[in-house]
Image (cartoon, rainbow, N blue to C red; front, side, top):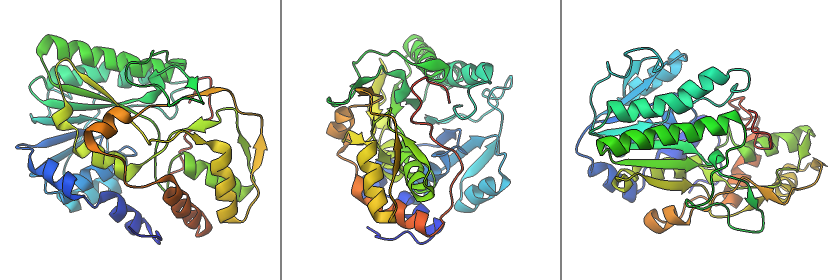
Length: 337
């Protein structure tokens, strides 16, 4: 495993180099793979690892407002289709595929755009399952659907209460319910993935904390505990998830194994960066946390640990590395993003 990320190319190579397990899983897929919402935070690297793992045909669908991103995917051999999936007839105009990732969603800017938030996060997932009734579908939802749990525990497991806070989280639960409805009435094999904050060097909670430490910005400790999974590990899991699609639908949490203290993360980053963190407020007794033991039991643990993430991120920040400019807003306890 590389100890230093000197460039975006190094970062992407680390996240997109498939393991033997990923290559075996992709080799077992006997048809085309459709990635809906392919230009989001995880979509491009998911497409790339699928191609590198030997996928026979990957079709990426997005609005592709960033033309360079579309060009990059085409250069990899990914077929791209520009489409606004909320437009009438857009889904029905897409080609059939036996394997579908539903990655499309709306979070950043959800506050003030509530109608779009509900359309993307609630209406669209159900329509995807309706359209691809004969496919195996991996639907990436959000861990935000859960109620907050005690920081002294292991987080919410898949059978825990869902009590989403705020309209973004509520819309995510709405999407799950509509997807589950269509899966039930059609017999569509579906896996609902409740993802908790994947992180990489340009985005994520560790990224946010590192830049706040580096710049001397205040770090609100109220949401004092988090989970983190390296985006490369999240993508590797997604590549291996189609066999878990089931009817009735399977629900799987996806995150790291540890409950992490944001105070401790910031302090460790402070040592690596040579800066003293500036803390405000105190830790609440509960937080948005997920228990991922079901996934780990099925597919094994993530490969990249938190100490490696911290080291890579500190080196990246000191070198002035690129940021996607999308704060996670993980510290929000109101559900407003």
